View 1 (cartoon, rainbow, N blue to C red):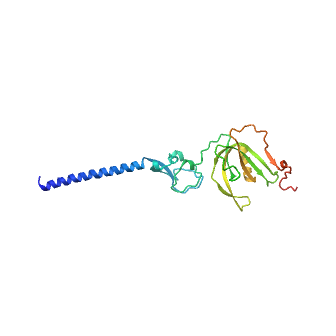
View 2: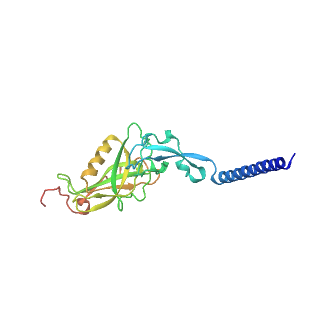
View 3: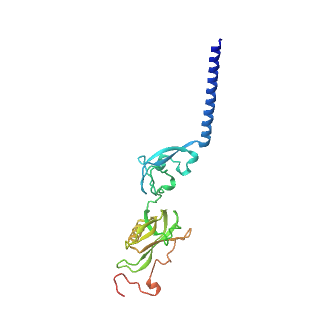
Amino acid sequence: MNPRQRRGVLLMVLSMLAAVLVFVGVSGFVADVNSRVGPMVTVYQVTTDLPAFTSLSGENTEPVEVPERWAAANTVLDSQDIDGRVIAVPLTAGSPVSLDLLVPPSDLEADEREIAVNVDAVTGLAGRVRPGDRVDVYAVFADVPGLARQARILTENVRVVSVQGQKQVVTGDEDTLQDVIPVTLALPPDSALAVTYANSFAEEVRLVGLPPGVAQDRSDESKTFDAEELGGEAVPEGVDR
């Protein structure tokens, strides 16, 4: 083997050695990255800005692969977990979908109806009531023609389905804003009608909390209260004293 051939063989050996070193280095880097990032999981994000109470589908969501260590547990979902579900808050494009952002699925009985009422954020118990709690619904009538000024129990022992975030609504005089919290209740149909009427015409609707395991027989409790209870006279609207 002449000197030129020996140099060629030496260069080939050096090239192979360099290739092995590069391969080992790249493999080590990839292994280090994988050890830092970990396995990947699928999360779903919305593809456009969505207002609250929008139904999710394949048209407004898309799957995205992210490292498991960077994904919250309640965002690792399958498509069947979100298809047809409704978001409770507005979401901007690119926001991940998580279970706590979805309106809970309905668990109504055959004789129940869902109805949402706006409860005063300060006086209406809304700061303490939670889904699954049992409440009474009280209404205060003050300015309804033909109806005595009184506080009345509209319905008793009602199940709270959901409690939404605080929002502002325009009051009856249309000049001021009121802080309210929408609360969804499960009611029999007749009671749903009564609460709907009160929510529109009563001066105030309140939720009154009940202790756990409240007795079913409450026939001895007063159902109404008016000025006569205080020694005055309950006078219907439009009637002079």
